[in-house]
Image (cartoon, rainbow, N blue to C red; front, top):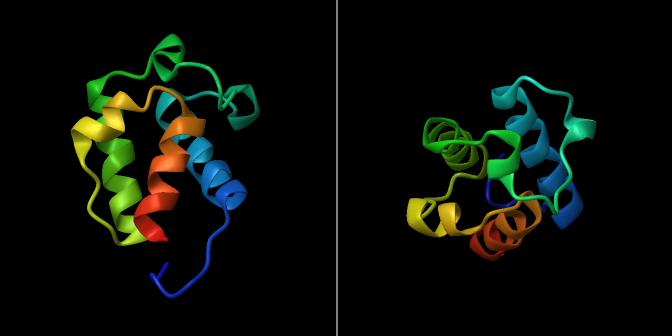
Length: 85
């Protein structure tokens, strides 16, 4: 994705949930964007992998500490939308 492409909040959240589900080996529809990712078993190894995917997909640099503070997919999506706006 190039930065010139417009991505909506819903599109980004859907993509992010797909990536999280991939690493957690569970269906995307089982990931509630408002539930703490740690409750699904998201640990630092998975988080690094997801952040790497985000950086590759969005072509932005993600502050890992800030990403870790965002405990839910919804909150992380809000942070990422701010990076690509």
